[in-house]
Image 1 (cartoon, one colour):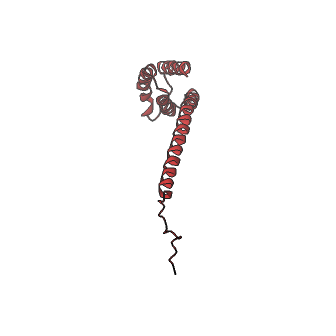
Image 2 (image 1 turned 135 degrees about the vertical axis):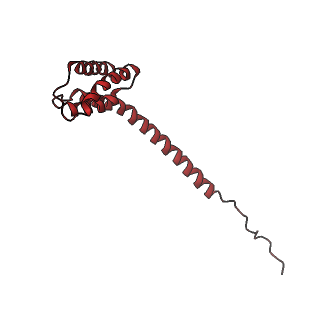
Image 3 (image 1 turned 60 degrees about the vertical axis):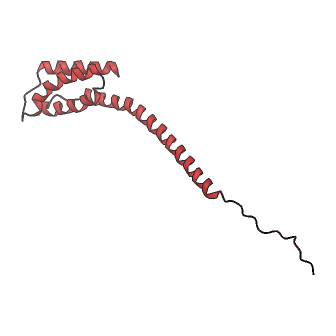
Length: 129
């Protein structure tokens, strides 16, 4: 009998599935990174404004009845409000006056000069927020 030659041998097909998987994962990671970065930048930019308002409100609420605690609180919140050159210079002068009250056991009351610098710094911060 004659040989039939109508069946052809199998053809090898190149498989791109692994390549497509890797490319898809990379594109997904890049998109996730971009979305994360945009969300992070959005949160940080809004937090700076909100945090600065929060610190200013807390700075304004400092109770001068206890000079030692007031000096620590004013220093803590004042540092966080000192963002530009003018506020840093005024705060540096205020901090020298506040350091007197931090390290003594009991202090009768805060002198007028320190309160004037405190109020000046509060006014400067209020204008810039």
